[in-house]
Image (cartoon, rainbow over all chains, first blue to last red; front, side, top):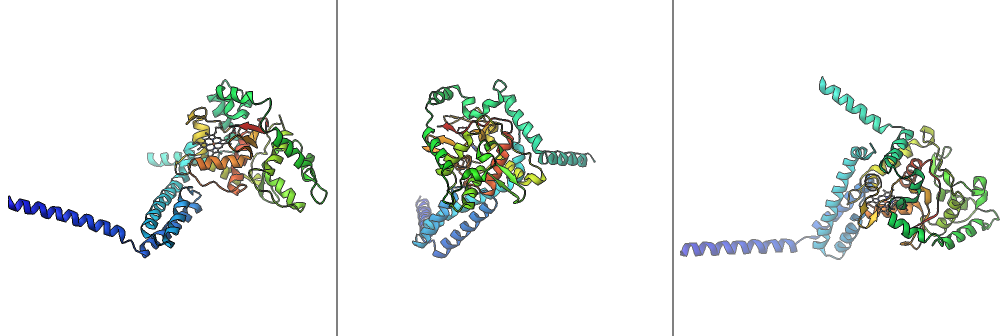
Length: 108
Length: 275
């Protein structure tokens, strides 16, 4: 019984420690990480424009993420950049797919 | 063996679809609508959504005695007639003095190897006469264009068939844009205005793309003024969360060219009013 009690307490402490470390990871986004993500977001956004498939939702994310980087709000800069990256990647997939797929829309 | 036959057949089919001539495209395009809406005379598609939705049509017709654009149209005529500072005027730039020519635009200019829309021609006329460019899409340029359209009432759209010398590449670019899904919502123009024409999206009935260019510029209540075809296209792009292109960009010109060629044979009935 005592062993069990000790064990579950240990488990609980472990869980708390893990959770605590998560939140400290979240807080400790560095300037370098945020900057790298913002740059990647910018590049992928430009690629989606070059592919002729820019989504109107991407630019505001990129712009805001750059602003937050300058304002040293690294966590939100990173999170916005990640959204922009994910959307740009989807836009590029759309561009690739539509190279052929548009023909399926022709009247038959 | 069988597989290679299949692949050859598919490649052949693919190249047939891609390389259909503009004439063939137009036939299939118009047939699609006349088959689906077999009780609607083809010239009715010039009335957009009001050809398909009787309730909307009743409301719209009630406004036609005093169309909301009357004043703006008069302004367009005055602007058109006002001489430039050098004493010349718009009429001097266009064949037939700019009267009854809407149906021939966009036109492919072989010497310059580029598409000329009516609005572009209006601005080039200004530049030739030492005046500044007007902003595309709305305001003065749309009023002038609306007046010019009104002088073409009933004339049949007559875009020269795109051939190698007549901007075939631009035509194909416009065609591809029309059928390509775009934006975060992943819709093509065709998804709404071809496959789903006549159906409702939210509370609005979707018009047929056949007839889209006949009645522009349109006076839209939402805008409180005239807007050009490219302005309307930009707002549809924005609706599907695609980044709209600039007015008179090569791609929008190409799209306008494709759309207008698809409506060859329909009468001009612009300007018109819409919600």
